[in-house]
Length: 217
Image (cartoon, rainbow, N blue to C red):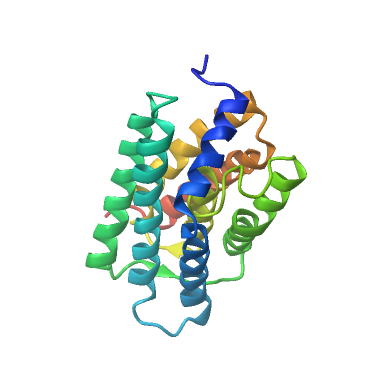
């Protein structure tokens, strides 16, 4: 696959993007913390709606602000990517409004919860540390909540904490983006994005397990 842009141009877009949207990065972190806090507290009866609303905002932001407005001028295919992100945002928004009763965010003893928490930590902290170590600079590369790849890893982490059969439709686009993002990461050598491959694989295994656990009636 040939890309219409190079590594320098890729990171130049992020530099311009991060400067233009400041301080939205802080808002994204605050929203992410709020969503995780709602799950960990286990007290809010509206925690599912809260988490879905936060995810809807993050995916809509990535679709419109990053993919459509900043990335599409250097990569025309980003308009298609924007469509995927906006569609996922609409799906999360629908779940936030409907609040399917069979879906619950919860921590359980088992590999899914451990993997979910690990991916949340990776996307919000380890990802940025790896980017700085690679020489990208904090404001010159992808950042949590406002860039597609760390946002997808964070989303997958949350989906691994979600129980119920209806998690399957919510997971299709994140898995698709994990594949797309991993391919781009390999070509551009964005090592922090290699976590997408692991996240996508874990979610795929989890989906298979959940599908067997919640068979269609």
